[in-house]
Picture (cartoon, rainbow, N blue to C red):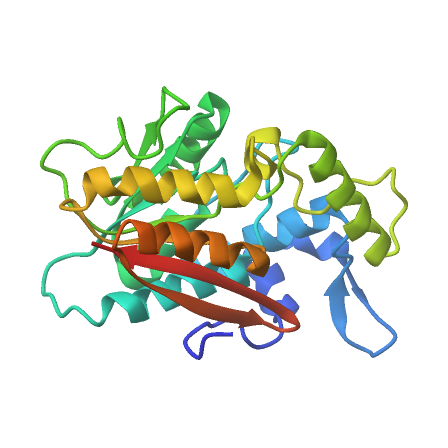
Length: 284
């Protein structure tokens, strides 16, 4: 993990339970004499997230509708820290302003961006349910609404249009795109993960996920290529466009699109334990 990520050490469940007692009933001591939770249990992961956000980021409360993505906080914080490194190349005394495309019901990136680096954040999503839930998460903690704004994308044909306002400027955009091509592919991906975790296929993955969070026509590569094409229209209103790339094999297609549009770009690697991930950053 990033050196500045406070989640790079083991969870202190005793301290987490003090701020969020509801977590206690999901904790147990494993065969290694370590206190932990069952990470395949969706409710256990939800309560862990609530505790982490209360303990480390001073949230009053946080929630998501049933079945929506329950994000792993450490990995989400890593993206934020690597973004801060990218932005540090440009010295500024002004407040950093960022845009999260596909903010989701959890609103996790705007919350972490503000709490860790005091950034002003805008979150955008096309789902009315996600938008309403994200707004509730902002209202739940006093002061967040002064620095975080949630907007709804009313036209699925666009990514930035209707969201970035005239004369508005962002230091960066970020995105965790849907990475499957179809509902069938998303289901197969879920089944594989369940098998890897040795969980019965009747279970739900611990992080959940709605259709618009998990898949889109053409999958991740096409979505990012669309984003790159549209970003040209806002090149004077954004310093760095960024997007997570779940599948490494998509990078050649993405780089080819960036080369075609004469963008300056870099791919930034991230590691969380055995998991390797990355995001691509570009500007004009």
